[in-house]
Image (cartoon, rainbow, N blue to C red; front, side):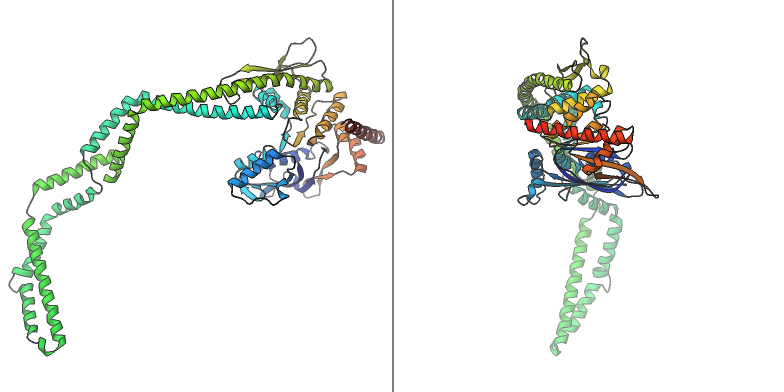
Length: 571
């Protein structure tokens, strides 16, 4: 149940807070005052489309917040508990689990923020909490009855908990069946493409395997290639170095030995001379070792055209393979592993198809059983629904009408392979026809109210919102509509925007929505009317002479209050 609603910067509303309770709440006011803005704000709060055009001119963001009492909303409490568990949020303290605070902000940038008890959550998760809070019947929503696709939702909404469980089981069974069906289809498509794919994979396997690749080998080959490429320059440098160190007259090795010998003669004359001798000998040994190493390289570095050809051919092969299979030998070896794995999968495809066919068959069997049970439940439900709606229509001054919920076969789907079409014969002697062909605006409004009234006892949603459901209704039907609203309000919180004085007079709480211009901008406001203010507002709705209208309004308010007392006494 909605306890309070705060609206900030939505269209003509600056900031308004409204408090609600149990029973029938009615919003009245002049046309264009902004009554539907309150319903729009509720729609936004419940997760509806967030359009930046809703934001008040001159403001950067709009905000709506609602506080709810969940003591009569077990489904919402379950969804909230699941959300807290998924988000690892704190468990509410005792007494707080019956209170829910929702808020939503929208920005001119197009961004929106949803919060559940102060915790920011994605809209998809937010919707799991809000979907069973309020049943919002927006302006022109009765037009949805013109679309046959919506009818099965209305019919199923009349079902009890057992029926809803059958719907859930059927939808889940269909989801599994659909998944298995798609998996089999993919495997069968692979089978049709198998031969061509196998040929391609085998060619790739031969190319990669015959290359006998080793990870990183291209780096060593490139170094070897560079040596062959620069062999003349390398040989010249080494030869020159060898001669300078070892073979030239006055070569460095010989001169270093002479220097060391000279120092050896004075080693006994001081530690510093001994140290110098040792360093000279080390330099001699190092120079001699470098000379021998250079000599070894020169002896081995003769021209080897055969090896050079091998290196160049190998690098050319690796380059050609890299264009198709990867930039490096490591990537090519990874590609080889994938090719081998895919070939193995294709070779076991027949087994996979057989298993997928069996899984699909089992899933179809489970779905068929669930769908059969749901359709049987729906057949029985349709008969009760027709009687309930016809009974309500009789009260709404459509006593001669016949209403049918015609069930027809449909392709397999989450609804159990069944569809529903509502047919109506508005007058005695007429044959039932589609609503889109026969129903007037007033008849659609009354039919929607009849459906809502018939389903109210089954609905787990604690609050219902009606925005001008009384469109096209007048006369005796207007009084019956008010009585239907009051009847629903005995078990549900009902919020209603109306132009009918009969509904306004029936309200447990009446709110006045006004539009005023303060000289700078136009503002819409909403306030709860005191009991002594209500006759004047109902009189405005009645129109005509102000004095007689007010007298009539007082009588109407008294009459409606007396009717409610009589109904309460019957319970």
